[in-house]
Image 1 (tube, rainbow, N blue to C red):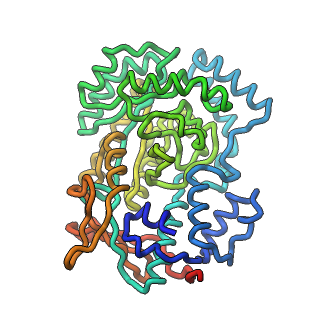
Image 2 (image 1 turned 30 degrees about the vertical axis):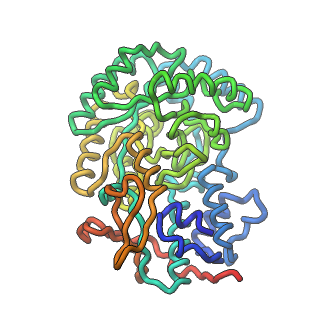
Image 3 (image 1 turned 135 degrees about the vertical axis):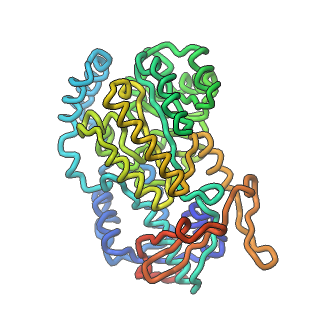
Amino acid sequence: MTGAIVDFFRCPEWFADTELRVRLQDDLASKLETAWSHDPFWRELQGQWLSASKIYELIDGLRREHYEQASTDTKLGAIAVREAYYLVRPLLPVPVRRHLQKFALRGWEERPFPQWPLDRTVDDLHRMLLAAAMKHKRVQRAPFIWFWPKGYSSCLMMTHDVEQKAGLRFCSTLMDMDDSVGIKSSFQLVPEQRYKVSEKDLDLIRSRGFEVNVHDLNHDGHLFRNREKFRSRVGRINEYGRKFGASGFRAGALYRNQDWYESFEFAYDMSVPNVAHLDPQHGGCCTIFPYFLGKILELPVTAIQDYSLFHVLGSYSIDMWRKQMSEIVAHHGLVNVIAHPDYLIENRARQTYKELLQYMSDLRANESAWIATPREVNDWWRQRSKMKLVWQGEEWSITGEGSERAAIAHADLGEDGLVYSVEGRSSDAARHHEPTFLRTDCEALG
């Protein structure tokens, strides 16, 4: 079973040429039992021996949100309320929307899974599999292709969803703010009904080195209501993608159905939250790394949205962003932030956003984080997915397009867990102790 280990780590296939059985640690088993309580197979995971293939099935199910807590209420009454809300939403001032959304989201703090404010269950499973394979092979060190180019510790990405005409008018000011700290971002534009997107708007964004993507069709909350409606709209969405010169897509309000994504003609999507407690559709992909959905690369939303922070939690502090980002950077993942120009016009919000930009700039300077546009992340992750680590002479080398930017890393088995190191970087910048999975029992299947 090579999929989970080789696809994620890009390590030699030798580490995954044996079908292993692994016993989950109690804390991880408990989390998964909560997620899959509707499925008899997963109800009692503690003490169970699972094949690596079965764990890969778990990983795929988590990333695709096939577990019990990932859902939108489909009762007729709830659907009617949602339709009524989106019908009048453009007419509602932010304070009214804020109160309605707080009511709809009541009890979000009590949701046990995914884990708020960041869930790394998928990433824990990947590390567990590699540690088990290393233990079975009786090796203390496993080489792999580092997650980010040039040995960067992690990746930071700023994205802007433009919801209304006022937000579109504010885009130029927002680009000035981003440029002030050397950050190029992407702007997701709604093609129909909300406002008119002119060639002048597109040229202005692209001429300044920023990126344009498609944001839903008309942002009415109904794109994924049923398969028939989705099919009637996806063709027009793809047409706007070609018109905008867009490589990426994001659905309105982060509604999604990942099993339908094969109809999109985009290179990547950015609609799946890591944990969605504060979004209309619950769930989350439980990973801080990009992953493929067939031909489409998913760049998950891994940080709280500005609207949720300002108007649901009622906070204008960057403490939550700081908490999420510091953990993601420490675990070498992707920070994907949504900041709406519509909600940054007001002075207090603008000042908070400036603090966020400065914090991201500090992470680049002090933690060797890579700040990139979504298109750049997509290009890199696709190249990395085709690279191979080969033994040449007396050392490992990387082959494949883009390999000149890639770095060789090692995962070492230590008493406190897996320790990553990247060749050519200082130990302080390149090493991080991961949660231990060394006590995970494993055996080879005959």
